Amino acid sequence: MASCLDRASAAEAGLNETRTNNVRRHSSLQTARFLFLCGLTSAGVALAVEKIPEFRLKDPAGREHTHRDLLAGNTVVMISIPNAKHGENQERWMALLEKALPGSSPQIVIVQDLSQSNVVQEATAEMKQRYQPGQRPLLLVDETGDVRRAFGVPQDETTVLVCDRKGTIVHRVSDVSEPDRVREAVKDVVKAAEKLDTVRRR
Image 1 (cartoon, rainbow, N blue to C red):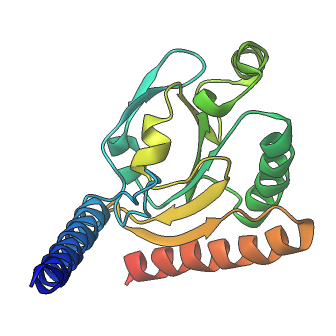
Image 2: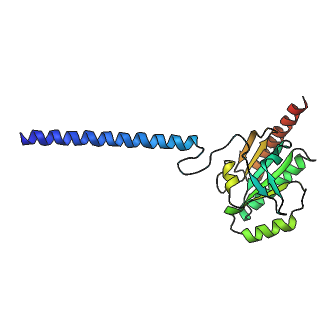
Image 3: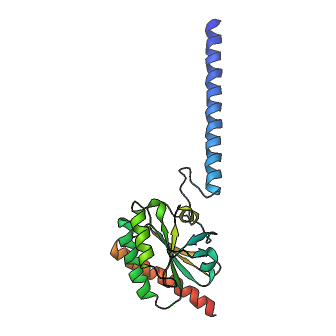
């Protein structure tokens, strides 16, 4: 009799453990789904967004700019990091973009995430020395990385976006640094920007 009771008790305990595990699994799935809908993965990495987020940033000369400045026309936005690794890639991108997109349209904006730089003082000093108000590209300083995250750009990555006048992000290129791949990616960026101009003129 005792043996039967022991077996029954063990079976009930096993069933309760299974139920508990199922509840925990369901809870974890619900939490993951909630985080996804909030724009975050469980690791806290920002997901890609479809619209330009609201922000306020200063250029190296101290003048404040907002997301509304990006709505003045079609815009190419580069979000990167002022350090040795990404600095070389920025120069590669910018040389090709400025050659392929001469003139003032689309405007080109670089957002520099200082929070990830290991040479903050040197980078800040160089940006202040080289930057001229009104120049193209417009240079914006993101001291905390909040704007980079709001754009859905992961850490340690250079991302280039094409945005229309309504703030919609119509094209995105992420983590491309090899020269040949950058050249091909720039062609796609230019096509996306030119397509926006064609639509606007209709």
